[in-house]
Length: 304
Image 1: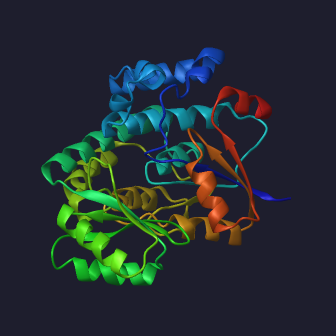
Image 2 (image 1 turned 180 degrees about the horizontal axis):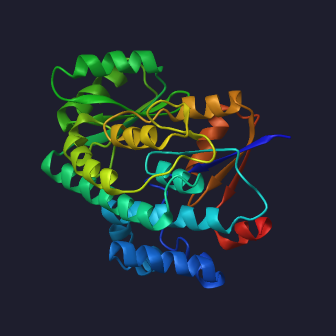
């Protein structure tokens, strides 16, 4: 029997109207969203359903919004169980809830704290990110090392073959963009972001998050969770906590995660939550595996 992998999206998968159909048609979904509002003190449902988009893009709102949407969908699915899970950056928290390593209420508080800490770090240590297409990882790592002479910069997301995101100081990222264009990159484009995520400029956020991680109860995961930092499966709660801490300043090894899940038997992937970003990445990593998106209530109905 083919193994199934649930994968959970991260920041940038949000959209105005997200989770509204779930809220309107499912009592369980409504209760979970209201629980998230209580935990965060944010009127999440109003912003998720109505926007404005600018508010939904704020890191401290985006993160609990995407997390809640994903966790709701995973909770509603009845006829498909995952054999393994993973999440892209923020999505790792949704994956951990799915694997029963952390309870939903505790997780949404933690995710909100993470968003606040990352937003603050982005203000205190301004930075940016850029998408690079068409260079291999080794070449781009070398370019980042060269550009580090003018400012902090490193690879932040190894998303799929030839698609990598870099992160760091404005000077460092701009230098990498310049060098990538000279070295034949198909695309080297700055992204509109509120901080240099997955770079050393998130150190302040990392220290803030550590305090929240220490006071949050975790449990051993019931199924393997493939983590961003190592791309390898873990189940032990102490290791999970440590890797969530490390995640903020280390690259997301998404391509490796998907390859390792496939090596370990995954033949069906389900993107659980808003958008289709991960579906596109999985297709680029391995076009032969089955990939399905479950976002709104009409998607969920097939698995009740």
